Length: 287
Image (cartoon, rainbow, N blue to C red; front, side, top):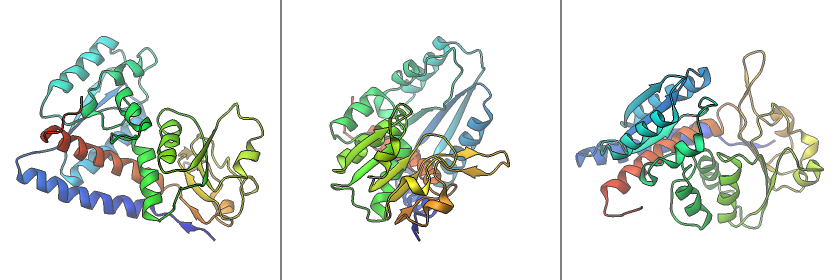
């Protein structure tokens, strides 16, 4: 049976350390602040935003929410971002996705100044990650890497297979794993003979948004399985992209859903807010 990677416990440990860092900043008169922008009335987004607000409160980060109407124009959104860029009391800016279809999310993300890019989505952050420089790393990939470190899972020379090529998870994870000296394969909806790749994986990371897609017969014994998927079934229960009950029997390590990658994503967002605050108040000048 696999070792269960406890993302909830690790996230708690990280938040406790960040709380101490936040206290130290406050003793210097520095109060970290996160600004979150939400456009429209997406119920799932409301839940995510509420969780971020609670995490900020726990750590001691000031939190400000900007709720924009569904019919907000691109110009209005960019104007808000640029005003937050100029606001020296704001250390991190997060644009909650999804946003309405008439808005260009890539253009909006590009408008966020690099030093406040706590989501790690701007071209500057992605570019620095590609060349191995210190930067803001997307929160979910960053959380996955922290899990590997906590459980002493060495990626050097390992075959890592990532299912999914999103800009938020799959692509940054590819580079994070490469930076840890892994040999990385990214599979997606157009990949032929998928099982040929998954069977060779020493480490499999699933991020495709299909409930219980990854089955035991797709994997080899002893594989490390990281399940990034969060899917809600008809019964209202959360499931991952991996058939946990079956795969747990053959894996060496596995993350549960819930309680695995999810809590780590928010913990690493909080980490990025503290990092951004330190950058802005230090002599380090990044762009």
